[in-house]
Image (cartoon, rainbow, N blue to C red; front, side, top):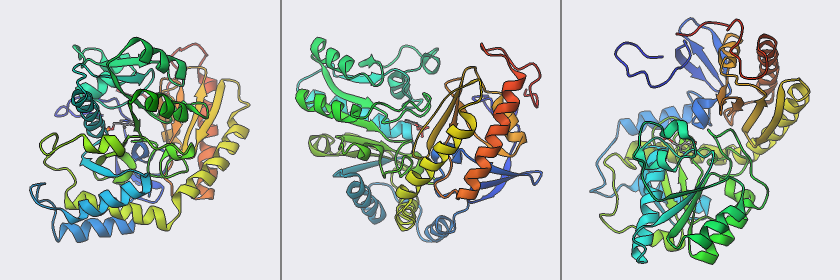
Length: 408
Ligand SMILES: *Cc1c(COP(=O)(O)O)cnc(C)c1O
């Protein structure tokens, strides 16, 4: 929702929140909502988490920013903690997911140039989302996100998602490939979960060719899928891993982690950012890790994700109009047989915050702190919203006959 002073970059919902607590948000009229989106997988620890709030207050009273011209002990600590959790060795910090992927793309290109590949190529997939900067939208596998911003950044070779043979074929035909960039589970693209063995297969192909395996874990990382990082489901260590979203629980921080040969690519002067890894965001990142560890939230996300998936399958699965119910930890999706953006308003009216992506996929990204009782409310309200929506619409992409709550 944009005022006349804002650029209208998104058609959001006509609601504003004043405060939150845990999995709940309150709007300006005092109405309470269950948050099953968590700011798009950002607020894994929920809203107004006391330890995060305390860390921000304390750090604000000490030091916010000095620039990377000086050592930043909190950044050094966060780099070590993240690398140890992810099985990586070196970290570069930035301020968003797109920037983390920009760093990865630059790293891959430099890796190529250091090997005398002067037009380095990166394999990316259909249906992927990597961000909105020029390089990351060029890497993104969605024409809608690219249209109007041509000329695109060159050097991306697109293959179908979950298709190892297609990746191998690019290797046969192109000698300039230096890296593969994929999401372990697609987020914006509709929560596509690849076959078991996909990441292992990519690891093998990359090793055979000397390519970098770069995993975009911006949405899947930080315990979201039931492991600290989704690649750990397959025991795969990438050469590059990008993070953001859940790392800051709401403060803007991203990270590009590297391992092995990828860790030696950037040299002083290769890359940089003024805000990157400042004391405030790193203090919060460290607190997020502390709290995720203390609460064993990787295990909790796996357990709650499993029970939520079972309940969603049971209640929503049999409804005509529901095509599929799937999930990986607390990245869950209910796919309908028709576009369902209007479901957002219906759910909102019922006090439930959800997301719709890829036109017809209801995406649920509940906070990791959600309780079993809250998860039951989520299932109940979602079922009600989906039934109400399906009753009002005909399959085949028609607009609802009578949209609940009209939107400007
Ligand atoms: C959100 C997201 C991004 C972009 O992150 P921003 O912080 O919005 O720039 C990139 N990749 C994936 C997989 C994402 O989910």
